[in-house]
Image 1: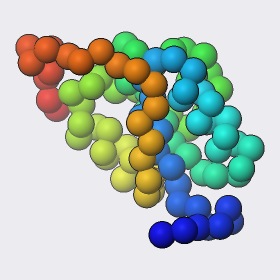
Image 2: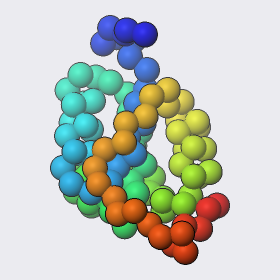
Image 3: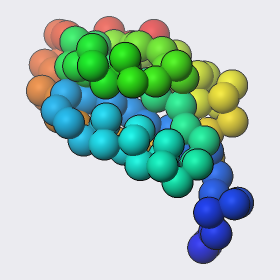
Amino acid sequence: MLYNSAQQPKLGILAGNGTMPKEAIEHCKVTNREYFVVGLEPYVMSETLDSTQHYITAQIGEIGKIFNAFRKNEVKEILLAGGIRRPSLSELIPD
């Protein structure tokens, strides 16, 4: 479905490390698109979260927390931005 800039759905940004999450946030600001960020700990860089007021942080296994935050903030589209290290099965502790 195509949207014009006035009717773009809210974007959820799942932020890992690197500059891509911050660039996505800046693009949303420039284009007046609503967004909400979930910073994946320990990967997300502090300067990424410093550039926004609309965020929470979560561990990679906290899928329920992540989805609940996106649902509560009425996110309709999700962007996975930045890198993460593939966790071992012993590191994954689902919520």
